[in-house]
Length: 442
Image 1 (cartoon, rainbow, N blue to C red):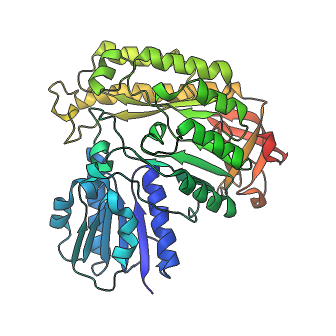
Image 2: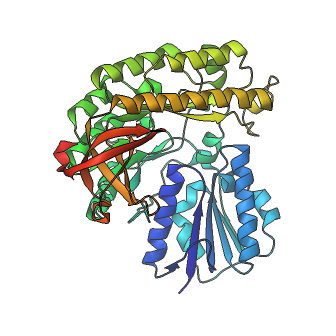
Image 3: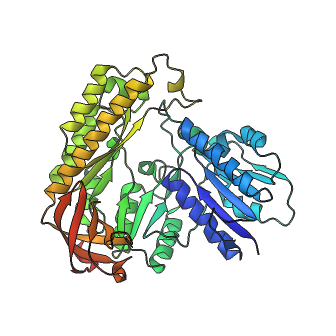
């Protein structure tokens, strides 16, 4: 009986895929252990979305090698896809398997093969892959919400992003497999699923099933009325009347959208190859807030992109400051080798970049406070995720993604309850328990 540990860096899709590895290892009779323990097989699901993420992947591999000099290393993910040759230089003594993103469905069988050569490489040209890897998941260990991966790959080729080269073109999970996965999660007792992918809005365009993201979401909400569905991320151009109508019509489609903006300056958006204007983004926000005044709206923002002038940075700040955004995910631009933007001559210096990012992160705190304050004395359906042993308080998320703390016993963990927000203190939101919830209340 093999002892197996799985370590994951990076995005929700990586986390879903790692959960699939764990599901299959368990089915094969392996013992799953924590990464801090000794293991016969270490699976490392890497990331390389930024130069720092690639560095973290290398550091993690070296740490595991030092602690487990005899373990077989199975390295997969975006860093493995992009830098297989570097891995061969790093891993010199341990048995090694490198599994590219297009072959993740073969990872467990490769790791457990009876004939174990010292080195196996399953990478290939990810750009030619036409089908998504089938990776069923049984459970997400320690998670109250599960990720539902319906799509992989990206066709956008933003100038700062390596993902189309590591994940390949957009590929969708056939509808029946999507519903089979949802049924598994329903049987396991999950109350909320986060619908995710690399570019979810392109779902179905590569299939011959007459489905797209909007029709699929509608069918999911109708077929599984007891499950809350939350959309992980959607492009500004994909926020349209169809999407908003779905959120209005279905009580189990959570009023929460995460919309990557990246820059509030049209010239920078063009340099990023983002294919929309700030006007497109503003119209999307206006549509949402008109139809769903209490919808949470988050967005990604990048500070210090090459060529970002002081005026461009100010345009971004003022645009966001004037819109009812609920929160910001702010990132400093990272010069990622292999992307077009990494070759731009007008890179922004570190101190200037840090200053712009800090200002945007302060705006994020202000936006959160404003959004939370609007919800004082309002009632919500809360998915309780954990009991914080230090504070003795339950923690969970409202339907519109407000993190709340409230008094109550551990029996409420992994259940839906009704709560009323009564206090916001230093951007921490406190609610009082009203009672258990029927799903229709949400």
